[in-house]
Image (cartoon, rainbow, N blue to C red):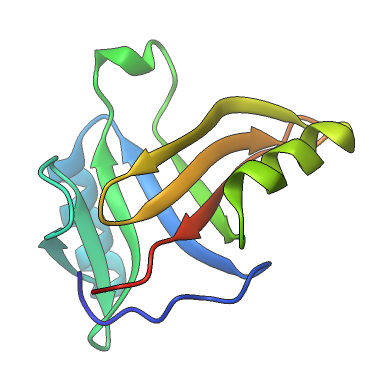
Length: 130
C-alpha cells in the first residue's frame, strides 16, 4: 500500500468503487481526475489503489457474480476503534448489518452496514502497519 496514516475513529477515511468493469472505470477516472492507480500489495485480489500525491486515498475492485444484480457503486468507509463493538452500537441505534464484521488480512476488520434510513456505509478497524 502507498503511504497511509491510520485515521482517527469517526473519520470518513476510504472511498471504494465497486465496479462491473474495472479497466473502463480505471481509464475513466484516471483521465477525468488524473488519478494514478496501482495494484494493491496487501491483497492478492484484483484491487487497485487510488494514489494522489503519493498517498492511497481509496480503491477500486471488480464486482464478481457473487454481487448478483447490484449496480456499480461507490462505498464510503468510516474508521472505528472496534468493528465488533461499533456493529453492536449500530443495531442498538436502529441501524442494520448488511455484512457482519470480517477480517481482511493486512488491512483490518470491517463490516458493511446501514443507518436507520437504509443508507449504506462501511466501518473499518485498521490493523497497525508492520
